Length: 239
Ligand code: NAP
Image (cartoon, protein in one colour):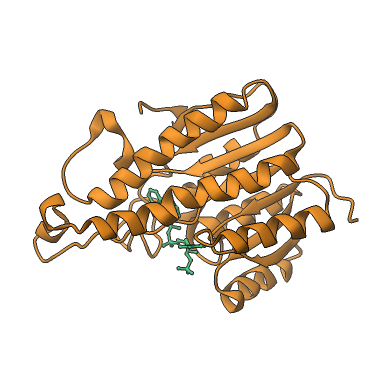
């Protein structure tokens, strides 16, 4: 079994905030298992970080697929026997935009689209967290990439699938944190802000480096850090 100081898993890490989170965690000396559903893209992303001297390794993971999640858990158990950090980053934005934004109205949204979005954005993190928390052996950090669009306190119309999926992810964050309160496993959610990725688009206000910053902070909290919180720019924000 391989001996390392700290071990992190990041989901949906072949591009965007997930890939940048892998980079920043590895730059802190943390061993990173970069996961993605595309083997070619994930392996290429991990190779690119490794070629810069970072300790990054690829493993396939589709967060919608129970068997894929269990294969990752088996790999981690056999290879390392533990896990310290889980960043639930993988996400989709499936709501239609339409020329005037009207396509994203709840009145134009099929329930199947909401169900499909929940499968990745909400049940994905739940599936992966349930499978990997036992490897944390009572100590570790779980980080959920949520969104301000899931905040009930600022809830507006449009984009119901994405909004509902992230509100539900926030609820799961509280549920996991409460059930793990007697351990030293912390579970927190964050909004990365509006970040220039394929999802955020080129007009977004934040760089990738800024977008990953709070996720990395939560991933590396020490034992005195918060659990069951929702953060942006390393500060608590309303649910
Ligand atoms: P992105 O560039 O679209 O990347 C999304 C990642 O999720 C991709 O690697 C994608 O893989 C992966 N993914 C999707 N479905 C998956 C599945 N079933 N299994 C495994 N991986 C899957 O998005 P991003 O902007 O980096 O977003 C990362 C996270 O931040 C998301 O949870 C998003 O909701 C959240 N967020 C982003 C913003 C923003 O402004 N960008 C704002 C608030 C919150 P493929 O390449 O295979 O599709």
